[in-house]
Each structure stands twice: as C-alpha cells, then as structure tokens.
Amino acid sequence: MAGAPAACYPSAAVNEPSPRTVLVTGAAGFLGWPLCLALARRGDSVLMMVRRNRRRNARERVDALALLEPDVAARLRILVGELAEEGILDARGRKRVIDQADAVVHCAAVVDPAAD
Image (cartoon, rainbow, N blue to C red; front, side):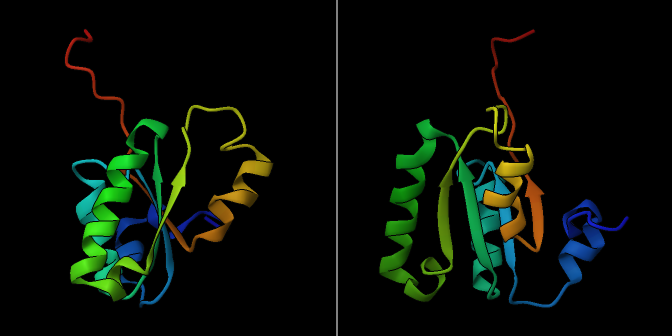
C-alpha cells in the first residue's frame, strides 16, 4: 500500500536496514521501552511517544541510559502526546509527528485492570 508506514508490514519494519527514524507509541511501557532500546542500539533514531503522565518516567530512563550508553541515549527523543487527543492523527499532527518517521510501531494501550 503506497504511503503506509513500513511498520504496517511487520517483516518490512524489522528487515529494513538501519539507520532510520522509528516512531514508537507507548514508548515508556512494558513493550515499548525494550523496543526503543533495541532500535537505538542497532543505530536507529527513535521518536518515543509517551503520555504526559509517563514523561518523567521516560526521561529518567533515558537519563540513566545516558550514563552507561551515551551514544544509544542520544538516539532517543521523547515526544509527549496522547493518541486520542485531537490533532495528533489529523493532517497537521501527521506533519508534526508521523511524517518524521520512516516506520511507526504502535505499542500504546489503555491498560485498566478494573475495566470490564
């Protein structure tokens, strides 16, 4: 499909050569953070999209990583945003966020154990 990010096709997203820019949603989460690390370690630039309430957690992780692997931490950039927010996925939001990436990996989720 023309114009679709490579991550829509998992084999293409994994097998494309580095370096490239990858947007990861849910980047401070259980799946997102290890994925961000793996991508940065292989040479990709990573746009880490995190919710406002996870920004501090993400910043602390990147700062701690910078002490051990400064070259890897330098490839990580935190973007604060909520996918459900108006403006994130409209034409203007795509220009601001999604169009910066060669691939998008969607790991964001609403996790609420109390929900039915």
